[in-house]
Image 1 (cartoon, rainbow, N blue to C red):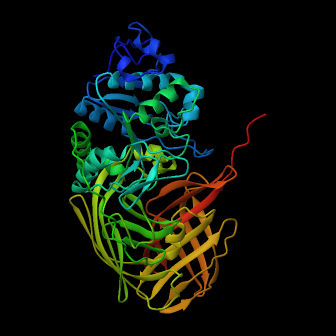
Image 2: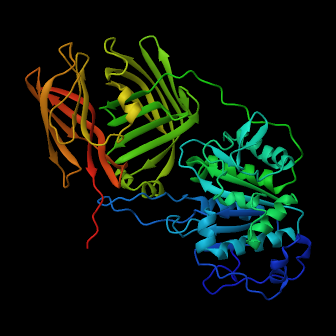
Image 3: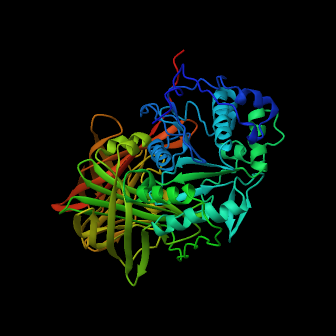
Length: 568
């Protein structure tokens, strides 16, 4: 499948003569027209496939990194998992040339950063320009598709061309230059978007990754650097100026990269749109219909019969709205969806909150990342790599208590169903509407203990204690009476380390009754706090006991992890 004469430490590539038609820079002309010239010595992790079509695929972040040390966490980017496989499959179907990093950690060398390529990987520029020259010797144009991953649970392919979309017009961002011509945008790209829409895939333009920064690889395929003193960069600008080069960055959400029907839909759309000449089209992406914002809302409920626990929230995030749905499925197994939409909304992807007269309807129809061991989430890349894609449908209603301010946690009753593939779970249990969960999310606190449980319709608690302080703050509801500020304290039993709780003991006044809580499952995560410090958070469902009453709810325990001081 891959050219055996290229891609090894001692491999090299030879060009045939006859490339004069590609208008090569004089500095490069002799080099690329020499039939025996050695172009580059590429590392083994960079694989090259040479095809006969006019498509060139590049996967710069298809490698992996080692699992991080939770005792000494560092800020590291997640590699774009499955993009190497997606690119390889597309290249075979399109008979395209492909340059695929399927082994190098982007934290060691980022091929999508022009500055790093110049300093540390000049062979990569040499390789890219040489392959484009070979394509242009056979075709009037080259289509460059740069395949990336976006760790959203939504079926989205964010299109990066250095711009955002204003109506049917592309508006470049800052000093960025467009990487496509209007004709190409309204033909091949328009066709791709139409086919994606038919497959249930959204194709926003620069929603999260516009590829407009001067250090982004995509900008090399524009006229932005026409005055560069680097011959490779100047050559790419020359081709772009002559309209022989069109480039699009494809940021693929998780459902488009993991094996499944949406990945097949993306594959088929790309093959049809970029593999065949497309007529000019006036098609444009239909806008996402606005939904009235409902403010930051979060809910959590444990269903004791099935052992399933649900966390879900929709909350403002900068200029957009973030949504999350997390299911604890029993033992260490979880399923997680995260997504985001521009603007203020009450719906994110397939997650929708709708107000009811005395509560809310909570609906979800989409995909989640299913993981058998939630402990892996101490390293996000390791967790994603071990995850599979699962279809989730949830139709729930929450009927809440009438008292309490909207910013305070409110106990209530949940009913409805949750379907995970072929498994259907009936929900009839007490839980909480908790705006604080939406605002912060599990693990968005520097350090603290949080315990919440419903015992019956008249008895519930939702208490917190800051790190280093066992004093609790409320509110609690006991015997139908609400106590907004109970006094009391909490002690914790550890399970093997200082970060993992095995149990909690609460002493509250009023009422003067002890409470015990035993975790049923856990999900540990790390959150950066700045200055090299992190918070390590463990949270999940728990069983509570209070004066003979059995309750069900959730816990969260967070502690700071300080940066490790190097040995002298």
